[in-house]
Length: 256
Image (cartoon, rainbow, N blue to C red; front, side, top):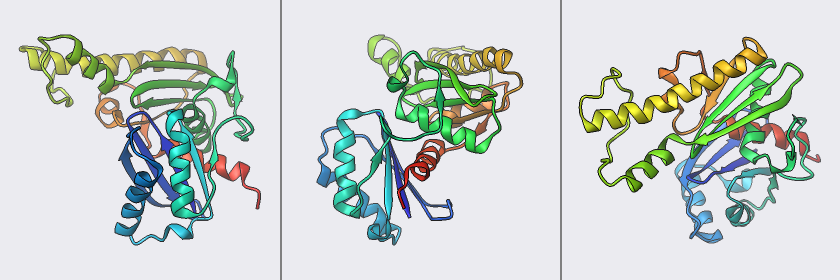
């Protein structure tokens, strides 16, 4: 069985895959840069115990990280607990992804994994959106090339900045508005924050479909459940898209 870890700025997603590719277990923990290798190992061990899973049953691991200061810490925790040395998305790792970027080496591990997973699910061309701490929108053309990528402020992170920097803006729960009416401060904030993300996503999808044709769209990320149902485009949501992509990358790089 293979453990995949998607280390993000807000959370770390873990998925365990059986040899058949079936997802056996998935869980999420908060990203905490102050935690040590041993503290992460303890948290992981607790989750494994709750799910009656033996970490020594793992035969491999794959890590993708956009938090470089945590890559070694989490990788060492996996070694300590599971006894396997993880592969990490980066130079020297085979992805079979043709990245048409000025500097392919700077493309984030999450972007690479999402693109690989999308190509395993859909025929190219395909559009991929990840609504996390940042919102990333990717275009993969009919030749399976990653041709364009856009990075926007994430829904929750931009909302946190708004309430932090604007003294009179209250912190209100974000939820799908029943209408576009803003009759008070709370509803105005909710509608404005939520629909600015909706219109941004719809707008970029329309732009990319003009270039790519009627490409399918797949989305993942913590805000996907809030934003995607309000979009005018048809968008498939895959909660574990990034880890699924890490698993596919592991299969391309395993040595046995």
